[in-house]
Image (cartoon, rainbow, N blue to C red; front, side, top):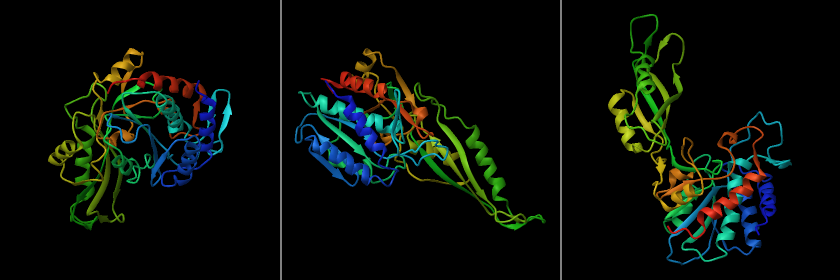
Length: 349
């Protein structure tokens, strides 16, 4: 019988230990100590920790992953974000929903599943830097283990299966003109040149649409131009948020964009590709058989940095993430532990 209360207490301790992205050392220390005291052989690189059920085994690796870090608390919090409080079924605190609930539920499932023989080598990991895409998070952890055959990514999905996830590509765009006096007919206005490209981003539709993720979405989110009112600007910079839909790679989308716009286009990163798992994958088929629903997620997670099949599933609701007075229901965590175990126990991957 799993003592879920033990994991709720752990989650309270995690909430009470600030772990905003870039400052995860304290919470990594806490979790490492908690696991070590319970007989788990914990490994660590930077602020990423993991435990392996069968070191050295040649069995396929099934990876359980959740992130340790949180966003900064919203200014509209009415509660102390670092003071865990339980009111009825709700546990309040920063990171409770995103994604402390998934972390402790996956850890409980790991301990239960690894207590008996499995057809896979199970690894539980808690990694840093997910919220700010830091390079010292899951990217430096994954090379420490064999390439997983399957990854379960803990994020708040209402314990439904995110079988696809949109990627992310942020573009820095610059239109160039020639400076001049605004009162005379001189110069080339970079802002006017940028407007045409911005309109293209607003109206262009990539033809391939995903069943789960819909269309590629491009949104101009920032613009900067000009030095003073009477000077024709010779440079206009703007930022575009691009959400790939799995039908195109980031590189393919970038190529199409550069064919259509006249401004300079520089991607900040091409790493965060969209992801999907086949509908006939054993874990998806089992989940569907359990009555779980499959859907496409518009939000990004550690899935974008995993070059192997992954399924995103966890307790809580995505709408609560990054919001003031964040909470998760204790009953959601209890349900999640059981679902994880039923989904993975004896699974052939």
